[in-house]
Length: 181
Image (cartoon, rainbow, N blue to C red; front, side):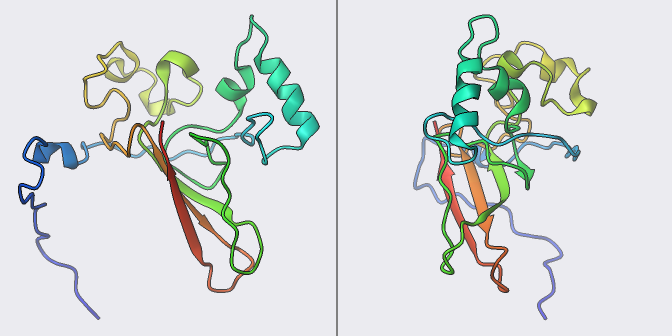
């Protein structure tokens, strides 16, 4: 069995992209505040495969009300950010991989560029530990590296990486996809 390295090597940047600074490839220090939340399936009517058609259409009409725009999406639907389990918060619309056994695979985890959206979602998805932190809830410039996520990871153009598994197969095969704005 291999032993872990006592001192892992530092990232090496070989100059292939001289305009990109090495510090842009290193995540920012941050703290993980894991918590259980309640969220509901994605609804992007008429394209959703996560809800029954009639319910998706009803939620779409609700979200189009001028006094409560996108209420389901903002307050109840899928939580943004990096998460284990739950429902994917699709960036470009639902895409479910099918296992070689023929079953639709289950969402295992999402690694996201953005963890929460203060401007549009208010405090609904903001971790309890961060709600009184002015560096998170205050106004920040878009050029601030941590504006879109405390970890500083950017996948594509504010994208998310989705990983799926098949619970019907003993070897639990994996499939993944990435979506970006």
